[in-house]
Length: 395
Image 1 (cartoon, one colour):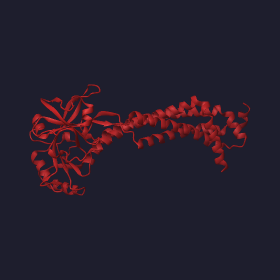
Image 2 (cartoon, one colour):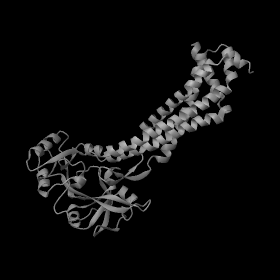
Image 3 (tube, one colour):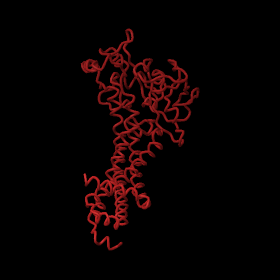
Image 4 (cartoon, one colour):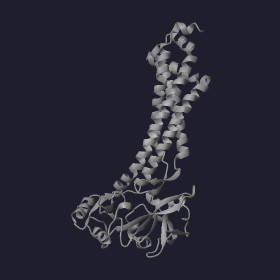
């Protein structure tokens, strides 16, 4: 108990004396704050992108594409093949018909509102059951497009990010004029970055004949996937791969998320090194300024261990303050901030929000504490080894 009392007493004295060392303490706090701020800001991009992609995924919905295709853009299915898929076992039925939507996916150039640059926006042709195979999609304004007409509905995120997609607007895409008749929400998922229209109209507008790129199907339940996959694999007329929506969108999110992390972690590491040196400088200055104070405590009977631990606690406390400030600024500034970026898997724009999650904030605080421990260790050793007689001669 004596050791703990000594540590508590010396630590309390150090903390009470912090106002006398504001300048050097701020160096450590600001350095750690910058590290946590950049760490949370950069990695919140990856978190937000993943959340947007994975939010569209469901284990009860499957996507069928041509065998070997890694994305809808490089897939291709004939009309006959989509009918075979729709009649396979394991699918949820609405009356006598399976709940499926054969779809076509093209990219169109639309200018961004933010900087007037052109972006590849997904224009998706869907069938009537498109809403039934996506449980999180609902119309929030206007109406559904009519079959056979050049009408389209737009996702909320796409409407916010890109020009000319207001309800009732006429947009020229390719050689065709389209009318925006509705706006849909999709729970913040990647579907909100898309524009939808009747698949037959899209086929004609882009001269795709009767071809499709994917078929979305609702499964009877999660256990039906194996039955459905086996039926397609055993049919010689088909060469297809089957993914659950969750599996597909998770794989689509990985390249971009990994790229962001590949940048984020090295930047954080390099800034962390700088923050450690800032903490070292701050704590060495603190030890130097308190030399006689430390020597007096030693002369009064306080052991070197109490001085060592109290100095490390002081450094860690300053780092914790910096980490909390950095996390708070990152959350206030970046959480929910909307941007769009090119999805390298589909070559289309995905609109998403930065997500400064609790997990990221905890990681940032842990990083701050590590910086504080490393930055305080060597100055703490110096303080514990400070010769008492030499320091007292300076009184």
